[in-house]
Image (cartoon, rainbow over all chains, first blue to last red; front, side, top):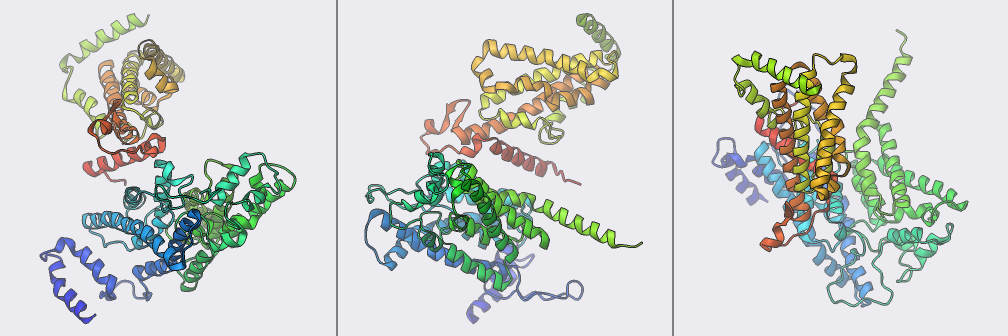
Length: 405
Length: 225
């Protein structure tokens, strides 16, 4: 540690303004503060009260909260592969296979986005943004493991460039950056992001009888298009899976199901949510209201289904919506993005609830989009400032009414 | 009737503009400004709808650009000639009638000689009639200026629109279908290529227009006040 410190201290003058590598000052600063506490102190004038954690520590906390889903995702990638091929494998084999497949995606996302970050920090002379530590790990987690690596790179570059740098860098973006990357890839290369792409099956590998790579949501989508019993058809379609109990509520909560790398496990997302809430980095109101909104919408649709209205998807028990697909992942890591979410406390309730409601609506009524959380989060990102505007406006009106003058 | 009016006004215009050459500096600027600093699409943000709709391929972009240039230039010319006789209360309807004349000519021409392209452009040729650029130039320029400058102004704005359309069409066709004017570039050079579906959607055009605006503003040093 000491050797590192003295090495950095020796190099520092070269990177200071006017030094040999003055242009790369921010690059040096990023490396230095990544390892050590920043050395700048409060000036005589200006802000005097400071928090113990800066943006870098804040973002690292989020990365730590994401790690459970990443590790679970690695195991699940291996697990899905081995149950699809019908081979027996122990925990470590599954995990290592998953790690071998997932790590390149993570590395490519970090490298591609990092290059864009560095170019912009040198060009615009702003410090390198720590926010990318989070974005770079979120992007791989919301992609299928089979995605070609060049698409990961392209999607990441697009998101960092168009969703963030165009608007002025970290803290200025309107849309969630990781979701933008996914939306870009989803519309640009739909064949790699939908259909039976969720399980790693190298060319020529044999699958067990009756195997289907469909996720719970696409199974339900098919059931809703086919004319099956509106009330119970959905659950029947889910329980009729090729692998015993694959889409039971418990298994979907645990997360050993096909899906994007990090999104499958609601349990791991909840652990991450606990870390975020305890450390004060994530907002519990948003997380809770996303789940509540989705559940309430599910209940409402169940009422229609109980009267025989609509398609079979309406009859999915409301609590199933909370564990299928990426709702939990989106609620915990995407919707809580402090930049693109609502800023007012009341607004956060509306923001979260509407994300949940829209997610379920898109899932149930639009067969073209099996999963709705991506579009719901992006849509509400756009509307978050409007929600804030109404909340602030209502507060003004209330106070004006109270005023006696 | 229109012919008479045309002869009359050009005659007067020529007499009055004797002191000013046809391509004076001022008139040249009418042509060159809309290409860059006062571009109808990227600066005034007009005509976005058709710019997003017809730019999937370069061929449709080019035909649309030429069609709009033709309509804007000649509508400007005719409205400018009639500008002192149009009652201001009904000027919009008169403008529409004249624009419609040119649009129908373009439409019929395309149907007769380039049927496939006309199919590809679908309703957007007809919709030139409501294009903001056409109506905007009529209201903002032709109603208050002489025929020759008005004609140049219409021509310049049509070309400014066309430049952006071709740029957008170039990127959309190249990345969306891997070709330029229908010529398969990637297949010909043997490079691997996978069509980018976003470029085929209007959203892709929206992003490209945004990028063009970004580059243009960075170059011209423009900043929003």
